[in-house]
Image (tube, rainbow, N blue to C red; front, side, top):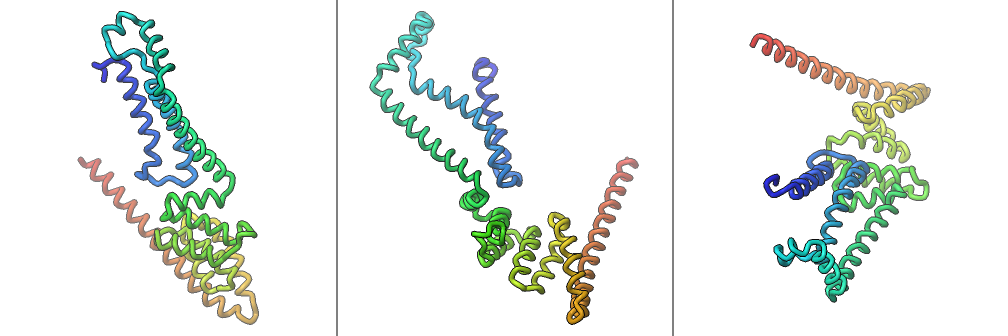
Length: 268
C-alpha cells in the first residue's frame, strides 16, 4: 500500500479499522443482545466515509478519462467534469436509486429505534434475528410470567423456558425463572427442585438464597406438613452440600496443578 501512495494506505487502514469494529458482532465471541446492537454503532462512522466517497464517484465525473489532459487542465478539468455530471441525464436515475436506498435504510433504522422503546418489541425482534438464542427466550418468558400484567400467560412463558433449556441444557439461568412460574402454578415440588438448581447456578444464586430461606422457613413451620417439608429440605440441602464439596475439590485440584507447573518452571 505504501508504494501506491499515502491515499491508498490510509484507505486500507480505515477499512481494516472498520472490520475490527464488526468483530464483536461476528459471532466469534459471546455478546449480549443489547450490547451487540450498540457495538455496531461505531461502524457507521467508517460507512459514512466510504459511502460519501462512493457517492462522489457515482455522481461526479471528475475528468479521469484522460490522465494527461487532467494533469494539464487541473482544476478546470474537474469543474468541467462536475458540470457534465450535473447535466447528465443519467444523474436522474442515480439520484432515484440512491433515494430508494436511503429511504429503505431510514425505514429500517426508524423501525429499530421504535423497537428499542419497548422490551417486548425488542425481544421479539431479537428472536426473529436469532430464534435459537437461549437468553432471548429466557428474557421474553419473564414478560409473560408477570412482568407485564396485560401479557400474563404462564403457559407461553414456560414454553419459552423449555425452548431455552433445549437450546442450551447447561444454561442454568432458566432454573430461577422456572421456579418463579411453578410457584404461581402451585406446583411446589417442581418449584423446590428448580429453586435448588437456581441456588447452584452462580448467576442466580444471589436471588435464590433469600427465596430459599424464606420458603423453607415457612413450609417447615407448618404443624401439619412441616415434618414432610423438613425431609425434602434435608434432601435438597444434601444435594447443595455435595455440589459445594465437589466444587471445592475441583478448586483444590486446580491449585495443585498450578503449583506443580510453577515448581516445574522453577526447576527448569
